[in-house]
Length: 213
Image 1 (cartoon, rainbow, N blue to C red):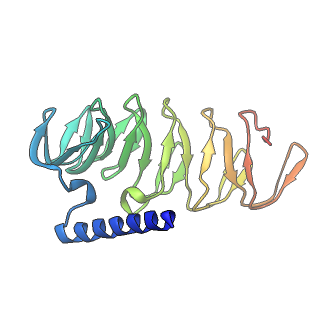
Image 2 (cartoon, rainbow, N blue to C red; image 1 turned 60 degrees about the vertical axis):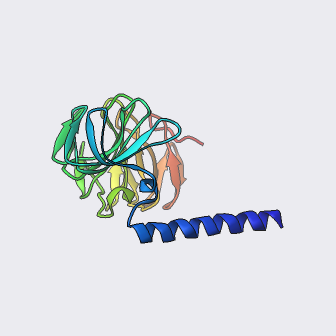
Image 3 (cartoon, one colour; image 1 turned 45 degrees about the vertical axis):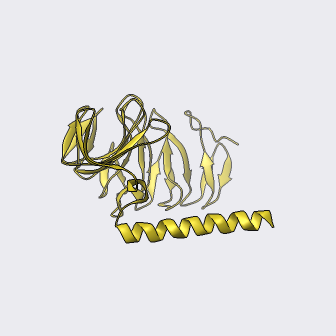
């Protein structure tokens, strides 16, 4: 009974939040936020600091922050004001990675592109990485601290080290930092080390190309 009552309270709270969001025209995080303020030298239309010290807000205008050309609108920071999430206002290149305007970027701890969500398909280091027209809920492309491609999604089957990887919507193609295949869903049968792996299998390999159990 207690579990049922708890579930009902959660469902009621969620419903009220949805109703309030539609009624006010605000995202949930904007409710109770400060408006038209300047924080850390940055102008915000809306701003909120969370209990853990992280910050979220809507930039009042396009603003360059830590060398990133940030687009007016949603942005997020860690507690120390290092960027956590942003959208590019113009084309930008960092750590050897070209990112078109509109790209959503989640910088790593060094301030380099850790994860990007591109609005359109884009060629990165010889691979056509799948973009998305659904904003920051789209397909993610990730990178190592060195700038090397780490994981991406493809619109067509991709061959890496002689292995044909599937263009899966749910399983990305992962690479080791040296560029060799790390993990993917097979598009076709392949023989590796005298063992046959059928189409549809998920395989993981070490940097030498040996399949990991």
